[in-house]
Length: 461
Ligand SMILES: [Ca+2]
Picture 1 (cartoon, rainbow, N blue to C red):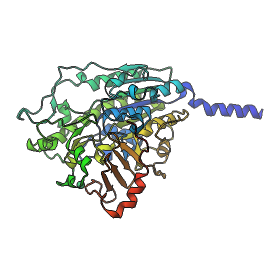
Picture 2: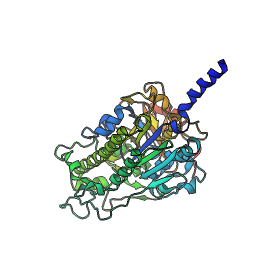
Picture 3: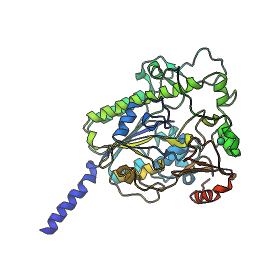
Picture 4: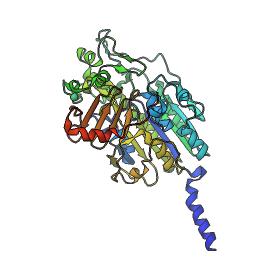
C-alpha cells in the first residue's frame, strides 16, 4: 500500500512536465534592439510600456549580452546553443547547415524530446536560414509590400546617410504587423501539443520608417543625445579603431555610408537628433505590437501556462565612440534586452544585475520546460537567477566578432582581445561609458591575465 501511494505521489510529481502539460513558449526575437527600453534606462526618452509590463511579470537582465554583435552569428549561436568559436559562423554570409550540419537546434530538441509543435514567423534566424526545414513545423513569412518605401526628410542632399523618417501608410500593411497578426491567430487557437511559437520582429533594424504617430511620441525638440567624448577612439588599438570606423562584415570590411564615415555624415547633415528620434520611434512601434501579443496571450487559454522570452540580438550604437550600428565588441554593441516571464516560480518585477548571455537561452528553456539538459551546449541554464535574481553567479560572458576577436564581461570588467593581440580593458565601477582603455596600464596586468584565461581555447575557422 505504501509503495502504491509512493507511486501515485511520484506520478503526480511527473505529470506537470509530461506531454501536453509542459509549458508553452512565446519567443520574441527583436532585431537590433539595444538596451533602450524604459525599465533598463538605456535612453531617458524611450517609451516601451508593453516591454516594461512584461518585465513587471518576470525578470529583466541589466547585463544581458549577445554571443556575436551581428544578426546571423548571434542567431545561429543562440538557436544551436554553440558559441561562434565553435560554429565557425562569424558573419552574415555563412550558412548554418554548411558549418554545423549536425547541430540540433532548440526547436528540433523541443519537438523530438518534448513533443512540442514548433512554429516561427518573421525574423528568427537571419536570412534564408529562417526556412531551415529541420527547425520548424511551420514557418510564416508574410509578403513584403515593396511599394511601401519610407521617405527621408526632403531637404536632405542626395549623399546624406539618413534612412529614417515617418511613413504615411496604414500599419496593417507592414511586415512585422502582418507577422504579429499571424502569431495572434496561433495564440487564439487551442493546441493539442505544447507549443513553441517564435514571433520575430524585423524592427528596430534599419531603415527607421514607421508611421508618424510613433514619431509624435518622441518630439524632435529636446531629443537627448547619447553621452560621448570627442577623443574616445584615441586609446583604441588598431582593430578597435577599425571596428569603430568601418562596418566590418568579417568577409571584408565595408562602410555603408559611401560618402564618408557614418558619424561624419550624421554631423554634417545635422541628423543626430533626428536619428535618435527615429530609433526611439521604431522601438515604440515594436513595443506597441509586443503589447498586442501580450494582450492576446492574457485573454487566451494559454495565459497561465506560457513562458515568454523577449530578447534583442545585439546592441546598437548611435554615436557612442563616434560609431553607428553594431559590428564591434563594446558595451553598447553587445548589451541587449532580455526579459523572461511567465514560468512557475519566476520572481516578478525583478532586475537581475548578473551578467548573462544569449548562449544561456537554449539550456534555460529546456530547464523551464522540464526537459533533460543536453550535452554539448555551451551555455548554462539561468533558471536559478529567475528564482533568485540576487544569488551568487560568477560566470564571465563571452562575445565574439570575427575570427579570434573576443570580449569577456564580468560584473566589473570588460576585456577585449583582438586577433592581432590588441587589447582593451574597461572598469565598469568607474567608467560605465568605456571611455578609458586601461589595457596598457601595468596596474591591471593581473586582472587581464585572469580574464584572458576564460577566452576560448579553440577557435574554429
Ligand atoms: Ca577611449
